[in-house]
Image 1 (cartoon, chains in turn orange, green):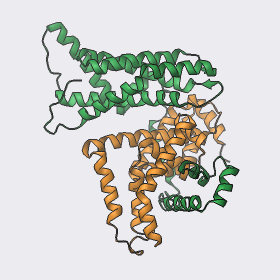
Image 2 (cartoon, each protein chain N blue to C red):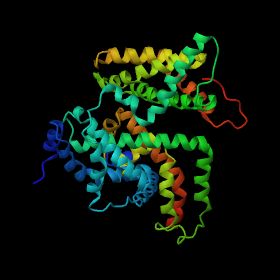
Image 3 (cartoon, rainbow over the protein chains, first blue to last red):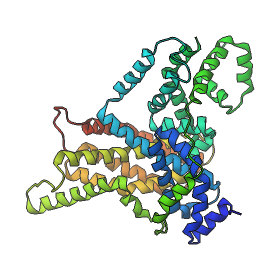
Image 4 (cartoon, rainbow over the protein chains, first blue to last red):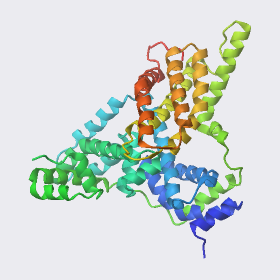
Length: 192
Length: 246
């Protein structure tokens, strides 16, 4: 029988790196899903999974057991992803001004032929979702992904990202506001 | 009748802080129900963004990739300086400090070998910009903390401590290169970070309010935003715009 997370952590901390394998194999899928929703890119998500587990291994001495290992790991994964998309956004902003990015996205929404078959969920609307997420700031995106896809409550999002719940809540609200602005016309068209 | 705002509808959608008043209002108000339906359609549409499901052997593959890198010494406080994303900035910083020192010794300014001036400046600006962004987050969290009772700031203190050494290096480099605006803000920031790091970890509401008021009184957040904005402009590739020294 495979050891529990706590038992595996104890073995790793006692100097047995091989015990980490159980933790990696058990949690890789969920960390990948989080990383993919943050990056919308499979290769980037895989890189982030590896970075998350390496960072967690190096920091395992700091794991105090107050939260579960998976929660602690999620926190590391969310912060790795946040660092990554901040850095990616900074690089993109140097190449394309933010205003232009927003205009491109809005133009993509506006350009759709308003017939239901063209904007069906399986079609163009679905293709707008990833760019819409990308239009959010790194903090808004992280908070939104944790709230919407991972089901974390606002308080836990704050803990995961090391911010107070007021800041986490504000990030979720801003994210929803922006997504609504961009997607509402397309969603309405899809229904008509 | 006061309608529900979007924030209340978002909390309602996610089932956070269920409020009987909100429920009752929704039952009675067609406009708010319509607004909630519209919000629900957008958020439900986001569910269509699916993550690919990795194969069953994915965990084993991750293990095979990372296991050769395990078994290294646990992290020490200074290992952050050698993280890949900081290495370039730290190397540039060290080179800049040494360069400035040597320039003073021989009374002659020379370009550092390897990196051209504009490239070095942009690396520096990106590094200082990221540092200011991280610092700003700590200050914003403290200023926006709405807790009424005792406040535990141990997490912010840990992060402030991590930033102090970095801040000192950037401040010295900015000073050496004659960028008074940046060095002045970093100087003020350093004092604020030190104050946060050296405060008690658990503050009662009056003590916390004092810390918060000191941050606000100094206007440090505004100054950070101004300098960050200037740095971003200067980071942009020079389209006919003369680059400026840090």
